[in-house]
Length: 310
Image 1 (cartoon, rainbow, N blue to C red):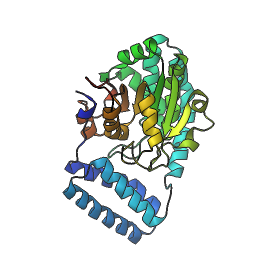
Image 2: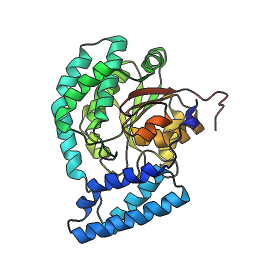
Image 3: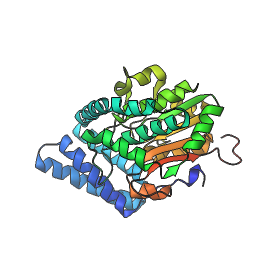
């Protein structure tokens, strides 16, 4: 299976998932119950139209969120949720760091990957998933015990230790970025240059520049943005600078579900070796990568066979 085989098509359950995410968003956009009803009615119309047209679920969600935000004139209604997520990650990180630092070589990579996946639990845009910010350390320890259901970590270790170059790290959510720190640090220690990519503007609790400036990651990597206001990195909306950065890179680590929905199109064009690192919280996305809901995933997509460049 190659990069372009990762496809997450629209199914009926996608609309239910989007509505579930709106239960968090809409009360932040409007306190008045009648206004909330109006926003839900608009959302139902757009979902019905999108389903009839067969719009990809991630694109349908992006267009709906943009319309709701523009209608209410609100830029970042989840700012407080992002702040709480960052604070919780800061409290939990020292214990996670102690576990990672107790390991060496390949086992240290696995511990750092587990930390990064534990951070991926800080997600407010997946149906039936609500992060418990007080149990991040507990979740990390459980994840270490569980291991990775899809496990290409050995391939990652071989690539990181036998090659050198530039690695593009596609970040996901605020707070989660702190749990990426051990993996970014280890990659840097192995001699790689890192471009750490955040969103130009948060659509939900996405990490932006302000969330990583002043953290250790800023000292380890060059911080750039996707240039887009969107879930993931949809090719139609990201900047040319971002696409050029990927094209010049030697490896990509892609965090989270929205990136696995959107980056394969770019990977198909660039032919870049990519590792998709995530907790599979959505059963539909899990199915697209031959995983199950709840699986911890480190999935390699190699250079496309016969690829000679775009």
